[in-house]
Length: 186
Image 1 (cartoon, helix red, strand yellow):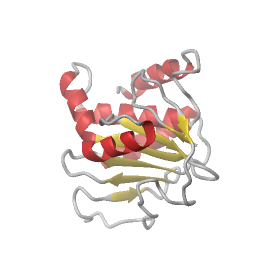
Image 2: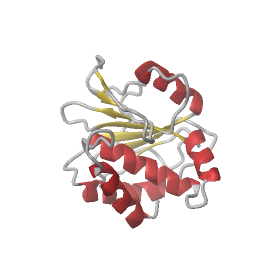
Image 3: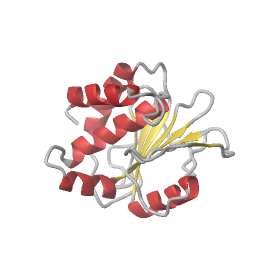
Image 4: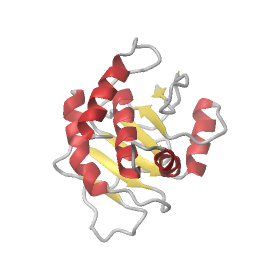
């Protein structure tokens, strides 16, 4: 089952699709546990050996993402949400790629900020984030800069992967997200 969310109050819905175990829906096979810090800019994959078994994939080059700050922040988010031994990926993509996924999995022919894909077995799932949409949101916000907005979208995606759904849980996800956003200043 894939839980999709556009990060707003728009309706989300689960969709069942066949997927090969261990493969992401965008065809990115597993990346070695460590990559050299000299990986090609804009195409890096980072795995923190002390993390909760997560990967960060940067599949775009338009907006630099502070992966070092995310590597420090994500384990705190995982702990605060109460996830135990999660394995997940966060993938930064372009609006064009996001539009394609949004069209394929939600039937909406436009980009969105974040999509969460629930995994199966030991895999918690995957979070796709459009850096172009996140950048536009931050530029229009008086409260968030780009890095804080990326953190907000990661948090939102993690809450969905943890099983929360702001459309059906009578405000539980929103309350948790508001509290954690204040804590992380995002």
